[in-house]
Length: 214
Image (cartoon, rainbow, N blue to C red; front, side):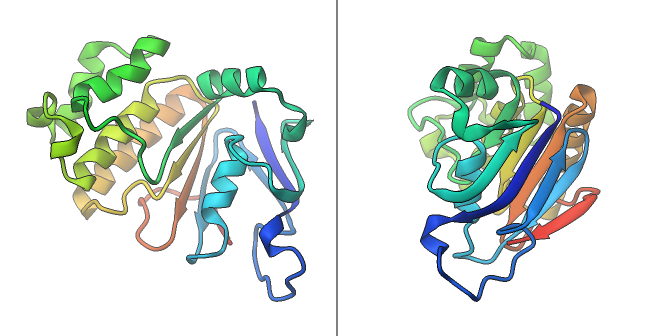
């Protein structure tokens, strides 16, 4: 997949409103592979909705969204499964990790499906992100900031054309945010992938080529 086009899209819950001022809703937005984008939003402007549309979890919107030249409303579940395995990686705002598993096991849940990274590479990520000593700790006993780093590593354990990170550093300090940003850029460059980051305030410091405001 080389581009995502959002064409005159609007959450149905906003239909009929005349006060919408947005760079994204009811506009044509093109996101291209190999580029870095920031989507800034205030609470209640539809950020979570947009993310859900792009990964195929919801379709309650007006307008159209295209992956390359294909309207995503035409995609079947098997298509979405393939896309999420090979083209789209997503770091959830709410993380969606398994609290009963360790940090290492949470990352390996995906990597065992994709065989995308070696154990040595993942170990180096834990070291780089400062949580190597927490590898065998269950998620339920880790802080939210530590869990964010685990979710981030899990998101990198697959091939992708685009990676969507929904408020990935909301609970991280500047140093850890910078480390994650560097790792994300490295992996995206390696795959020639596009990066889409969302934020309602504190965001990952990346060389964004364009910022859209919801």
